[in-house]
Image 1 (tube, protein in one colour):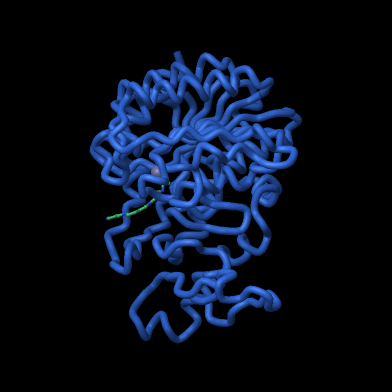
Image 2 (cartoon, protein in one colour):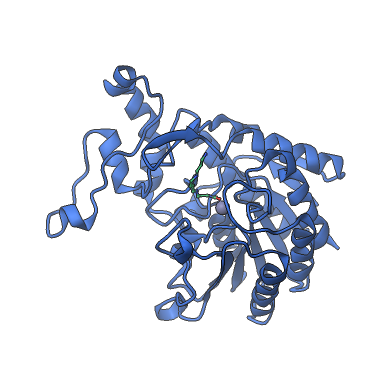
Length: 350
Ligand code: SP5
Ligand code: ZN
């Protein structure tokens, strides 16, 4: 399976996440790239460096204001007084102008970048450092490189995109995600003339960003299996079973939340349901949001999926017989991360 990656994705170093008011160690670290690369190299996959790709598919799923903010935020922070004053190199979202604060007032921007960040950030865990923009943009290039390979006739290509993307919405960032790599891939497949595209999301968390991007669109199906947000898990407010899409997109969104502790049995039942659903929906291509944080040893989710489970999930999605772009999402247990990705690809490639 061709693997598209970029050394630039290593430049994003979150270092910390501000979680319940505490600066915990960052989970979405640059070393993820290298451990996955090594595992895939060892399996004999072909590694290809991403090349710069056009902005259009990205701007087809994200508001230009979000993109502009992400591009400029780190420099704004460095130029202001606080970076040196507090000894913090990263933009930490600090104030959120939610309707609870600003209802009925004209929309405004904020001069201070840490307050302006609240127009786009929806959590405090997703910090912006000097390397964040180049890495996030390179992650999009990885996804678009994999799309290009599939449009050129590869049945399956893998994008080692990092930082991940599925929590990034049309106008917002959060959940360690800045730009929605998988959604950009789906949009690029659509723009190539494929009339209907499916996104199947295997990450342990619901991909609220991808869901939001396509919620009212009938041309991109979104299906996800994830730990039930109602059980107290990120993204908390989105990912429930009754979210079915809206307007022309009604019926094109499908969420299969699982209880804490669910393992291969119920997880693979859900993956099979999603594979059958997208396989019967008249799609011309598939994007897989491959988070491997549903694995039993992953510190960020309570699901208990095995590497063999991921391999079988790949087999199930291969049965859709759709050309497929697999995009990396979460997965945080460095010792097993690469093996889980390799397991999935071995199942999908057979
Ligand atoms: C792409 C993806 O998998 N994003 C995950 C976003 C959810 N992160 C929630 C983190 C909650 C608490 N983490 C505690 C970390 C302690 N080091
Ligand atoms: Zn996740």
